Length: 413
Image (cartoon, rainbow, N blue to C red; front, side, top):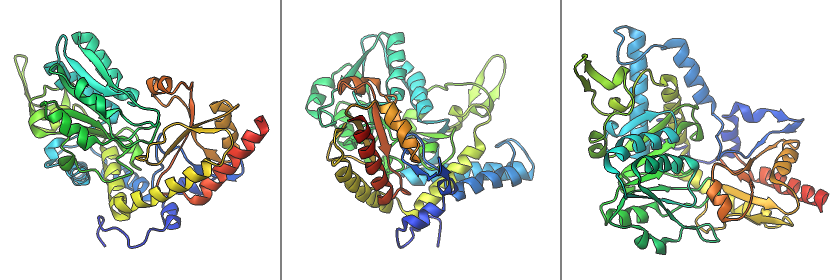
């Protein structure tokens, strides 16, 4: 069996056995980890890849003439090829390693954005964006005297796409859109949005931080111009992420940071910049992080992304029915096009109190505004409780969540 051949049967018990952290107890209760939209846990294969790299191949890349340097370079560039295949990019030149999705957005804003956006121009985002796909564009708009415009969200938690043609104007220079909301779970029709934007020759950046570990991604079929995601949400290490960009766009972009591998030659009179993708990878990168990300992709390919999506869909349907039976629970985001996220409030109980009491039951969830303050304002809530799913969660864990929420509600009734 190759690393990219899915196993024949989806066994959540077998999958859970791959994750050492899930075998522990919290406050004397078995850990139920439902904070996956924040970060996913790591399979043993990823942990072993990090230990193996540091134990056998630790060196800098692209520079050393010794065996360790050669091993490290091969492992790093091998990981880039795994990413290329994972998102179906046309070339490894289109795959830039960054720290996370946030840095990927900032890189585009500070290079492509500074070059192509001027006074009076417009950048279009949506009301369900993570701060990482809002703040960099606000900063650029402030610098360039440009305008940030927003696609509204309806009461179900879906984009009001009827407003798109009005919002796409001759002054629109870029659309930044989230593939899957980290609060609502809504999976946006990004391919449709891209087609609409491209009809006006407007490039589109897709934030796939949430979607990349839930469903297959094909950047060529999607036809996005840029796409970002983070390794730590993809069962990989923290501190590593990916910026995909179409080759023609990346070639036209100036470097962002200087030093290290982003140069071919330097004199005090002139610097000649490196080819793609290295001109955007200044300094020593997170080599082990890239290796770990490659191992995570191997693990996902072996498990099967489509099979993970199918299994998580059954969990989502089951959990939706269970939580609907909890008295006083208000779900935020009820789109039929929704995946793996339950964001809700519980009448009479502050979300932070819900989170604390669930923790004493061994249940890890997220509370707060989830780096989406404008979306909280849209739904007129100060914060929500968020339970988010991954491939290792079970129906029994959702049973435990629902029963605990019923008990908490009874306490505060």
